[in-house]
Structure formats: structure tokens, C-alpha cells
Image (cartoon, rainbow, N blue to C red; front, side, top):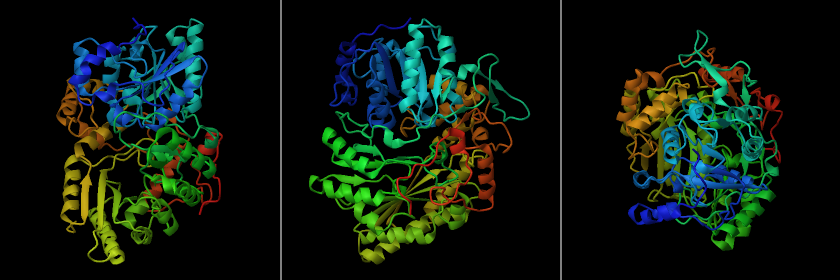
Length: 623
């Protein structure tokens, strides 16, 4: 039975003095939409705590878009921390929305962001705490239509049975279309199964219940999905893609949080997509084509957003901001306008081969901080394998430019466990960092306090990339290489951190499994797994126990290689990149042959533009 809409804040208020960070659960933030009359009500949920989910740009975009529709209201919900969740269960209080403190189960539509693989048990926790039937096939007619979206939908099979529908690709218009579809269908009195059939006809919408899993000689052991007869569902669901980013509203973040949040700054998306073609990068494949927002629109939007929010920092967000054809122009304009306001303009990560002296000066014109670069690999051979298209000279030039412009701290991102990696490649990581330190001392003086911190992630093969067929490194081999990394970095100016081998293994398992993975996720949750992305909450022993109950071995799953010609568990969903292109890129990786960026040279044949009827939208010619 669907819960009725009413304000439950009086039930939560007595608990606020008993939990950590009670401001996580307060409503009425500055900038939130207060009038939530509907009559159609949607809730956007982020399956993590408020301070992690509140800054999410995608959720902010959808919140604004749906609230701008006549007759629609959209609220937010975040997963309570463990202390609050325990108290809510003890007192039979369901998960509530933030704006009106209404039960999430009382909404017509519930959208949940799949931010990364380790959020899976949190999704189960969220649905259970809300009192929503866990599996979509078992839900009553009047329960919310539950939709998944976000960056990790590209192998959503391990959580697919939990969702009525999955939105692939850009959400601004597609999510609004889904909400209209559900509203109209319910107004017509359609049954739940008929609503799902109608949703499946929309661009970019995958309805898991309309597909069955087939395991045969052409597949991996996890099988592949095919439409059930008579459903009319497409063999392959292509993502929804917005052709022109400039036509979308640039200012998404209008809500000012009560407490300090992750990425506590105003952020604006300056471009979408990346055509660099890094072979490990799922986002680089799934967000294509490249669509730039004009510099003039960005500058005006930054001023508007800062004025509305009061933040003293602005982040120019994208997969590769310094690739923007007008990056230098926008940085100069922003620093000119914001110089006297004490506002810092930041770029999440700079491209090593596009970050010149002028860019370093422009980024640092207001307040100096550290700079972040991502060489990804420690040797040129390895960078060619992953198609990073960055040379030793690029790294040294970028470092020299940064130190010459007054910077003293630098952070470098790397990965270990990439295909064909050797010990020489691992040792090259700290050697690269030490060379950067050496350049800093040359530029700033031998006694200067130059420091370089390196963060080394464990490579996890992801769907829809040229490396989707490879296996992950075994646990003990990861740990051996991590120790090798530490043993070969004697310079105290180089600080090393690396991702946990255990958490990376679970990420790999969930990246590789098909729909059978849902049983693993639910079992792990029942054993007590949640907040798996939080180091102090992750329980590898419980994941192992869940796998043992199923009769599978986690390491065997993560380390398995797939035949490049096999039908994969995610082949029925597509970001537009063709499988032939991915196979070709895999062969080029093995041969150490790089592929160019199509926004600078000719088309590389990835297939996105003809498949989706779109093209790269570059404001000016890229350097």
C-alpha cells in the first residue's frame, strides 16, 4: 500500500540531537524550491549522505528542470547515515524527502543516481528504508515508478531487477519526458506493466523487465539480454543525447547547504564529452560527442551563480576543461571580473599537453593552490597502450610552467594494473613524480618547499571501453605492486596514496557481472554491507561471505577475461560507440599504437555521430 503524502518532520525532529551531523536532515535551505504542490510528485534520491550527494551537478540539473514544469514538483532525498537509519527503523519512520518531509514511497516517481559501482548496496538500503518493494517485478500498482540514471548505468545489470526503468545518457529532457509519460499514463488509468511498455518507447529508456537473459556458447557465463517476445522493446537501447549544450540552462546549483559538503563550491559544466580516447576511461566513451558551452555564456552564468549562492570558489567542470577551445579566453575574463571579490577559479584536473604558461597564469590569477594532473602511467610505453597521448616532454613542460607561475604543490593521478603493465612501468610512477620534484627545485630553488603527491588507483576494466574484455589483477599481485611502488620512492617530497585492493576488487566484480550480480548485492546488504565507498565501513569479509553463499569466487569473477567476440551482459545498452571500434582500439593498445583526438584531427570512426545523429560542437578551432 502506497504511503500518503504528509509532513513527517515532527517524527524526525526529536532524533536530531541523537545523531551525528543533524543538519544533514534539515530542510528549507536557501535556494531550494519551497512550493511543492504538484499534483505530480517526483523525488530525486542520491544513495549516499547529504554532504556527498548535495553537490551532485546531475541531480541539480534534473531538480531544476522538473520543477520548471507546470503541475510537477520535484524534491530530494539522501541516504541517512547509519545512526539515523537505525533510529528511523526503531521508530518505524520511513525515508523522507528533504523539502516536505514526505515519505519517499508516497511519490509518483523516484529517480536514483547510480554514481559508481560501490553504491549498489546503498540503493538496496535506500529502497528498504523507504518501504518500497525491493524488486520491480513485485511492486504494487500504486508504488512509485523507480528509475535509475547517472554515470554508472552502462552495466546496470547487477542492480537492474531493482528498477522499473533505466535512463541512458543525458537526462535534462529525457527525465522530463519520462515524468510526463508516467503522469499521463496514470491519468489514463494504465496498469504498471503498460506504463513500463510506454516508457520503453522513449529515447534512451531501458526497461529491464522487458528483457530475458540468455546464456549460450556465444556469451560469457553471465549471459546477455534479449527483448521478450511481444514487448516491442528494442534489441539495443541507445542513449539519449543533447546535441547542443548551449541550449541547456548553465546555472544548475542554486541551493546553499547548511553544512560543509564535498566539493563545497559553485560548479558549472563548461563542456560535455571527451574525444581524447583514453582506452581505460568509460566516461570518455559514454559521454561522446564533445559539446562545448560558449565562453560568454559560462562567464555570465558564473557571475549569476556566485551571486545567488555566495560561494567564494567556482569550479569549471568537465571531463577535460583545458580542452575547451575558449578555455584561456574564459579564464582571463573570469579573473578580470572576479579579481576584487576574492573568488578562486579552479579546474578539477589539467591536461598535461594543453596546459601552457598562459593557462597556468590564468588559473592562478586570484589565489594560488595546488595543481592536479593525470599522467595515468609512469612510462611512455604504457601511456601509448592506454592512448594517453602525453609525452615525457609534456609532463616536464607542464611542471615547469606551473612552478614558474608560483605553484609549490602538485598532485598526480596514476593507475596500476593496466593491460601489459610490467614492474618497470610501476617503478616509472614514483620516478615521474621525483622528476617533477626535481624540476620544482630547479625552478624555485633547492631549498624551496616543493611537494608532489601521487594517487594510484587500481585499474578496473569497465563496460563500453576497449579494455572491457580484460581481467583485473589478482589481489596479491596488486599488493605486491603497491609495495614495489612504496619501495622505489625514497624522496620525502613525494607523498604516495593508493586505493584499497579489496574495494577495487568489488568494483571490478560489479563492473563485470550480469543480472546474477543482483543476488550478490542483496546478499551482501543483508549481511550488513552499506556505504562500501567509505573506507571505515567497507566489509570485504561480508562480500566474501555473500559470494560463498552463491558458490562463486570474487577474485575469479573480477580477474576473468572475455573473448572479444563474446556477447556481453551490457551489449543491449549503447552509448553509440560501436563494438567494432572498441575491438580495433583493443588491438591497437596491444600493439602500442595511439589514436588521435577527432576534435583536432579527422574522424576516428567510433560510430557515435551516425548512431545518434549528433556531432562534435566546438565553439572555436582547438589548438
